[in-house]
Length: 75
Image (tube, rainbow, N blue to C red; front, top):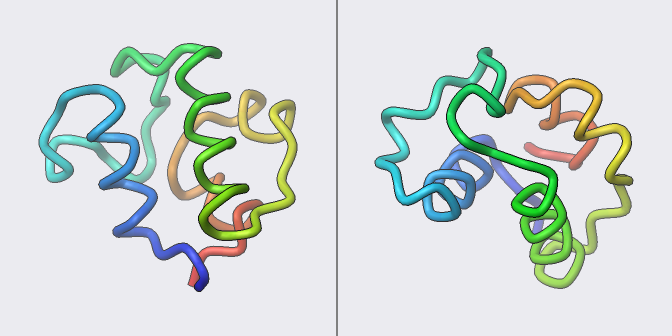
């Protein structure tokens, strides 16, 4: 099952204790409290649940949902 933008946003919001509608697609997620530990937690979840093969460096380089979507194979 492929990830969607909505699922990525919902997972990030869950990780940060925020409402998904408060997480923008195009802004730096670090500004919303996403740190390297949380990125790794999300990445491990997506690898386990969605067979994602993206690496940490690619996500950390541009921490925005719209930048992550192609790396994560989001539909």
